[in-house]
Image (cartoon, rainbow, N blue to C red; front, side, top):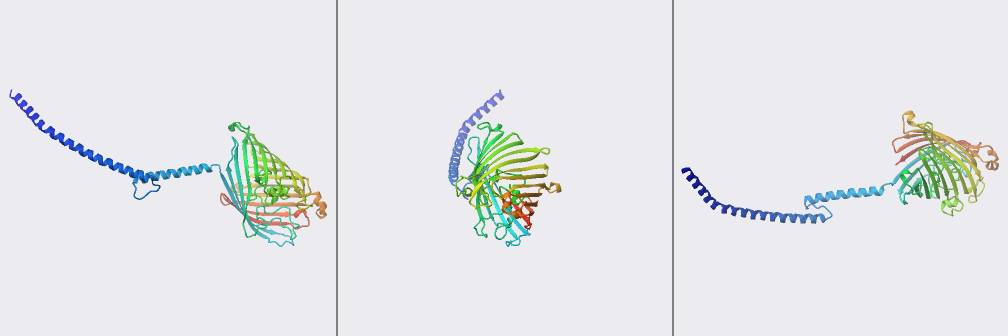
Length: 475
C-alpha cells in the first residue's frame, strides 16, 4: 500500500509541474517562428534584389567588373556559344567552296641565239594564278558551280627568239608560263580576269535517283580556256609542273599554230556540252562538243558569227595490269582561221583533227603522245607529232620528284614550202628535259633544258638552246 501511495504522489507531482511548463515552451516556440519568418523575409528580399541585379546585368551587352559572378559566367558561356554558332554558320556557308592557286617564277638563258638577235639572252618572269569554285545555282538534282580564275604576272621571258625584224625564230615558245599584257609598262604587274564560267552537272537519267546514276551531262557557259575541256593530257598539260615548251603543253596546231582562235592570253567566251558514261567504272567514256568565240569574237569585239567548233570523244581505260590510261580523239573547225600568207584580219576556214594519249606503263612511269593533222587552211606547219614520258622519283627513293623528257616534230605544209623554196622538206624539231625536285608538299624546283633544231623548219638556221630554272609554289 505504501508503494502505491508513493507512485500516486509522484504522478500528481509530475502533472502539476507539467501544467506550469507547457505554456512557457509554447511561448518560446512562437518567438522562434517569428524570428525565422523575419529571417526568411530578409533572405527573400535579398534573393529578389539579387535576381533583379542578375536580370539587369544579363540585359547589358558587356561584362562589367561590378556585376555578380554568376552573371559573368552566364555571359561568358553565352558568348562562347554564339562564337561557336557563328563559326558553324560560316563553315556551312563555305561548304563546297574550293580555292587553289600557284605562283610560278622562271629564269632562262638562251644559247645559240641568231646573230641579229639583240634582245636579252637571259630573262626572268613570274605568274600567279588564283582559282575559286563556288557551288551555286542548283536545279533539282542537278548541281551548279561558278568558276573564277584570276591571273597576274610580269615579264615575257624567252619566248620563240625571233630576229629583230620579227621574222625567223621558232614556231614554238620556250616558255609557256610567261604572262604580260601588251602595251603595259614592263615595271607594272598586270592582273586579268582570265576565266569566269558556270557549269551545271546533270545526273542521268534526268529526274532519276542520283544514288543509282552512272552517268551525267555537263553544260558549261562563260569565258573559259578551251584546253581545260579539250586535248587534255595527264603529264603534258600543265606548264607550271611539267613541260614548259609550247609544243608539249597542247597540240601545236591549235596552240603554237593559233587554230584554237582564242585571244592573246588563250581565253575566249563559249559554250560546252559533255556526256560522261560511267556504267563500267573505272572504265568510262565521254563525248563533248564546244563552240567558242574566235578572232575578234574571242576578244568581245565582234559577234560569235565565225566561231571555233570542236568535238571530242574520249575514254579512260585500264591497260598494263590495270594501270590508268586516257585516249582522246577530236576534230575542229575554225571559221576565223588565220592563213600565214594573208593579212591578220583576213580570215578563212581552217579544220583539222588530233589525238591525245597518256598511259601509265608502270607504277611510276607515264608516257604521252599527241598527233595533229591540218585538213583545211594555209598554215606554216600542218602535221605535228609530240611524245615523251615522265618517270617518278620512287625509282631513286625520291617519291615526290620526277624526270620528264619529250620530243616533237612540226612539219612544214606544202603551201609554206612553196612560198619558201629554201625550206623544202624542213621540219622544226623540239626536245625538252626537266627534273622536278620536291622541297615540300607546296614547293618544287625544276631545272629545265630545251633544244630547237631547224627553227621554223629552216635547215640553215642556227639551233637554239634554252637553260632555265622554274620555282613553283602551290596552295
